[in-house]
Each structure stands twice: as structure tokens, then as C-alpha cells.
Length: 334
Length: 102
Figure 1: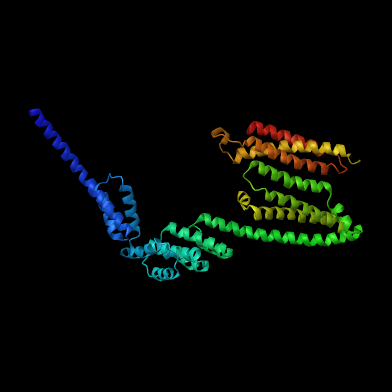
Figure 2: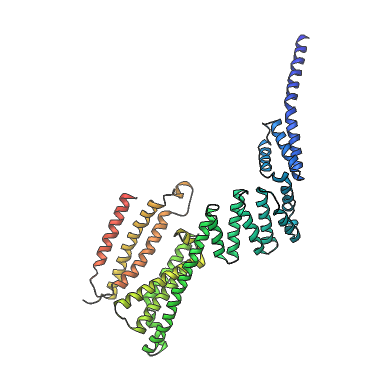
């Protein structure tokens, strides 16, 4: 009888201990659920308080990391007593509203009055995204992106994202100089974007130089072919005279064998090599026609011919790569 | 001095191509060891891309280019002394590669 009474008392102690442990866990779960509901319905101040309560009630609960992260995020967006965040979330959470012109225009007006903080920059990003992608007016996205980048109270990640977006937008609009100007204003904000845009500008200059070299060679080729034809006594003699079999075989090998190698490798683009082979063949033709049309000339003339034709080969190679698969240029630092 | 006959030119081209391929292989391997020290994927996972085969293919391609150059150069009425120098250079490069960067 005494043993049964002892067992009863011991069990009662265990149950009451378990109940006393379950109480904070239940409180924490209730607070977390309350916070989630408040968050979903955009009552952010209430949500922040409830997340804090949940963490305080049971720091070992499984949802505590989530609650902590949500609370930290809300604290970082608390400017203006959450009024700007509520205004932004109302648009951001509804895809139909973020594609509505009048809603976006109203948000832009409100964003201009937002206090300093993270929400202002994020609102500008939402506005820019709407103008660019949803409403099809990319030029109207420039101003909000500019504002998001210039806002030093905004989050650094948001600012660098805005910088990348603006550089991409200017490129799409065909204004590479504007893209360069914006990345040069903030070189440390998005270093990868800075390097990418500078490489694009450099490639633009090289492309212009390559086209100029090929244009000069084309003019020389036409004049030389005409002169050579008159010297040889007719246009029918030209192909055999300006295209020696060795040059044709070399060019075919240069482009064709390289293209086959790239295909065997399986992950490259063979087109630059094909174009390179054709470019070399064209340079051979120009050099040969030049010599046939105007004579061999002295050492300086031969040197000039060689340098210009070599420049033509380099120009053709650059354009072949740049127009087909510019990723090859990145490996060369271009 | 007369220009070599066609058969001789083809032989000179073949020798030039072979020497160029050997030189190219040594340079490729040296550059790979010096600048692209990555684990061989064949040692980590199964791979159908052997780095050796790729180097050999590129070296053969370069040898083909060299053969064209050799054929063109052999057309000049000069002694083919450059071929000996090219073979010696290719051999030395391969030996150095085998000793320094195998």
C-alpha cells in the first residue's frame, strides 16, 4: 500500500514537471502563430512584438531561428512606424497591382515622401521593375533605379542590385556610355558589373578599330583586283592567280580542323574558328591581289602590305569571336 | 641553289609538322602546369575528357599548321637549316617539360 502511494506521488511529480515545461513551449508557439498571422496581414509592429515574445518564451523552440530572422528583418524596415513597409508590401504582394500603371505612379509619389531607410530603395526597385518589365516602358525605370543607387541610407545589396539593373537597362537601350558613366560613379558598389561594362566598352572600341581595318582592306582589295584583272588580261584569270591552292588548303585546315576539334571537345562554339579560316583566306586574297595589281614594290611596301594584312587577320579573328561567342574573349582579358 | 622538288617539300613539311607538334605539346603541358593547376577530373570522377588526349589533339593541330609553314618555307631557294634548329628546339622543350613539369 505504501509502495503504491509512493508511485502515485512520483508520477504526479513527473506529470506536473512535464506540464510546467510544456507551458512556455505552448506560449512560444502561440506567440509565433500570432506573429505569422500579423505578418501575413501586414500588421508589422504587432508581428515584431510577437516574434520577440516567441523567442523570449522558449529560446530552444525549433521556429526560433525563423522568428529571429523575421524580427531582425522587420527591425531593419521599421522606419516611419512601418507605414512605408505597409505601403510597399501592399503593392509587392499583389502581382496584379504591381502591373497597374496608376498603382505604380501612386507608389512613386509616396516613395518620394518615405523617410530615410531600406524601404525607400526597395520601393524604387519595385517601381523600376514595374516600368521596365511589366509596363514595357524601360526609360521610365531609369529615374527610380538612379534614386535607389544614390540613396545611401538604403541597404548595400539593394543599391548594388539597382546598379546592376541600371547598367543592364542602359545596355538594352543601346547607351553603353550611360552604363559606363553610372558604374564609374560607384565603382566599389558592384565591382563585377563595373568590370563587365568596362570590358564591353573596350570591346566596342576594338570592334570599331577592327571594322575600320577591314574596310581599308576591302577598298584596297577592290582596287587591287580591278588592277590585277586588267594586268592579267581578264577577270577569268583572277581566281587562279589570287587564290593559290596552298593558301586555300591552309585556311580550310585552320578553320575546319579547329572547328572539328572544338566539336570533339563538345562544349565550345566552332563558329569563331570557321570565320577565322575564312578571314585568313580573305587576307591571303587581298595580299595576293595587292601584289599582282601594284607590283611587289620595295621592302617598305612589302612590310606595309604584311602589317596591314596581319592586322586584317587579327581584326577578322576578333570579330569572329566577338560576334559569335564573346566568352572566349574573357579568357584573353578582353 | 635550286628549289626542292615537290616530294622533298612534302617531306620537309612532314618533318616540320612533327617538330612543331612536339614543341607545341611541351609548351601546352608547361603552361598547364604553371597556370592551370587543377585536379585531374579523371582522378576524382569518371570522365571521358582526358587532359592528355586534349593536349595531344591540340599539339597535332599545331603540327598541321607547322606543316603548312614548312611547305611554304621550303619553296624558297635557301638551305633548310631552320628545320634542324626547329627539331632541336622541339626535342629540348620536350626533355625540359618531362624533367621540370611531367
